[in-house]
Image (cartoon, rainbow, N blue to C red; front, side, top):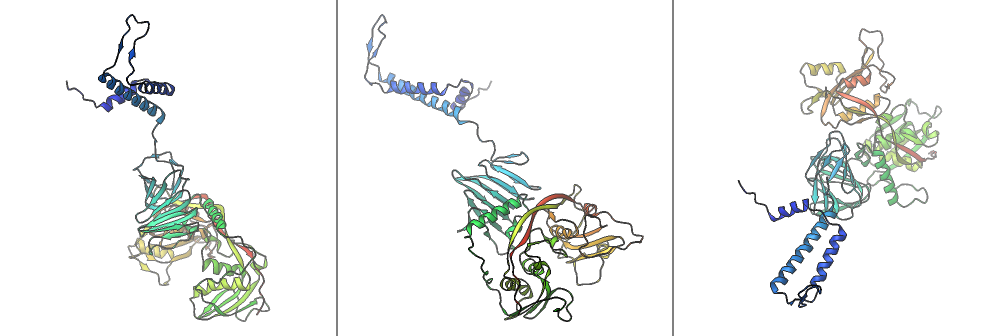
Length: 542
């Protein structure tokens, strides 16, 4: 029989596993007795007990003293090891635990299929966007989250010692306790701070970011407003409120309303005329309301302040979060202000010093007119409201994918949605770069050429009674054909009038029609942004 050879460490481990563990008081008493005996006079004779029949006085040999000292050291070490093992407690089970109960250790890779929350051992929390992927690693002075792809929002706990790191392929973010976002894309990485302060190191360059600040590692990355960057989060309203609170703490309180400074680099007007527009003063030929442009000139024909804010602050400025469906005949995206700001119309004629781009004249240059002549002051607010979330149904997508490099460009030719989709079924290249709406008997029909699912969700927002959030996490472009019959959940935003009394069968509801595309609409809540009028005055005529 083969003899098993055991190491001394293994034998000790087996012994300690079987042995009864002494109490801390017993261990401490034994250690003190041994140390007291070792500290006795080295040349003291050993004296037998007085009751012994023979009394012997003998000096111990050096071998005896050596063995005794060695035994004492071993006993002290063993006692200390037993005490250490009994007080050490169980080793940490996991580096992180997910919201679904799954536990992850260092070295594990975490993939978020449809959004996921992680709680780290130090109390930090990470929200992963759909399709995001990260790995958990141990660092010399803390913990490292290696973000391989996608977006995460990190709510870092206060670190008692060390740091929490988030690392992508080209940037390292280090924190002690703060809330921030990191996005890893193919072109590079982007970091944005919600609360606190982070250090961002790219190569040998290190930057500090404070609330509201963000940095991208590549000029190829699209600039994304912070409010849109956070829109995918389930806690977006709370994050945006925290961001607004953090920004307010950084700004000194305003003593009195003052005129805002002219935006840097924006051309100036040479002359501006503002007059009321009513039945008596309406210029000849002006019937509707809207902008009219010519080189270096802008005319706003019979527009009220609300319409001018929509044009200059939203459509030609920074879009509102999840409010695309509010820009229509009834604009609910602007709150506050006196009644006349939503009803009274004005005729504005302005001549620029040069020939700026039309979007500049309708955007920042019109904002300058409103802030100077109308003394307009505004701010933006976030509110959580009912919405729809669009997700992928169990059967998967049932839409035609489109390669934008292999499609026909739309040049204004007359094509119906039915004809555009029939051409694809016949093997022709899809028509891209267009959105077409039409009627098909009692039904409304749409063709979306080369559209992303995010864009499709925004367009659906104009047809439904609430905004639609894209929660599919799917990239790419599709040719989408949608046919439905209008009901109480839909709006007639484009003024399409169905034809009654035809042989064409009524289509499904819009929610069922979306399901036939392999998608699903589910009620949810999400953040919606408004512009609030803080102050506005009637302008003086000139």
